[in-house]
Image 1 (cartoon, one colour):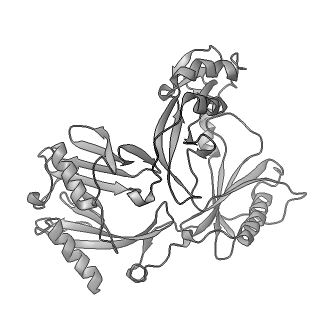
Image 2: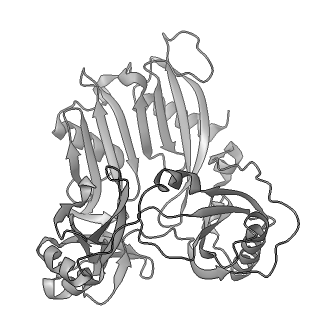
Image 3: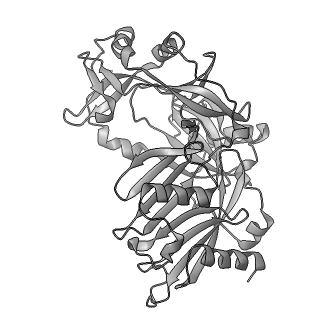
Length: 419
């Protein structure tokens, strides 16, 4: 076995008290983080020594599934199958909150309060989010730790990013209502949600979440796109269809890689940006796909974006006809990045079939201005440090949000979480 791999396996056995276990199998996976950096993860499945010989794909109770960053040795995940643990309990925390937090600080090198805070707690589970001096960050990092009925650790996961002080542009939160309310008014949008009782679309006004930079001069989208995402707004038209048919091909979206790739620390293919030439080639391939698969729908589709996922270029297609509905038609077309041929697509049309018999929404009786007046007192501006791609650092922003909406027919204020 490779020396670096063997050392990491031996370190894992010692650090996590797995003397009563043997390593059954291991795999390597490749990930990419919010900073466009590649990480290689060693996934190990440790079986209890007293476990019976089992089916190859079955993990017996007590199996320890552990993910470690192959190069940094940082712990990513521990799961004890069926909440059973035979590991050395002296190396793990008790279910007391203080003990759990101290152990998390030890294995992650993070500081509670300064870099992560509690966002949810139950009797046997604690959930944490990334923070800077108790102020949340976005994109967020998450930590979960759980315990079984005997108080033994049964779950630990850490995902996302936890910024350090060097990545922060420090400043006090300074957004006041006179700065954020005009933005909130612009974000007051009409959306139609399905009312299953009436089998009808219901128009609701709500505040679409957005980040407002601390000086109030610009905004950052709440659902920030992938780093590789290229926005498009291209209506696709053609004069005639073309001969042939589109054949769906099997695709490989697996993130598993080989030991050699992990040792070489190869760059993740999705970290290499889509070039202008690639984008232009993909636009033509999208057009060709539509001519084959939807020959009678010229002008009815537009290309809204291109992005990378597991080595493929994904093209995002939406109808040109705008609707306010919460669920709208969308096609994701997968393009092979080696030859730029479309190989597979996913259409959510079948998902929307369940709503096709719903009646159209009635015309709103409440204007956008009237709706915002009703919501104004409920608008929230929460301080958040948001990662800014332009400045390559986290900057102070306000998360503009509102938990309530307005029924556009009756004018009633409604809790959005209940819809």
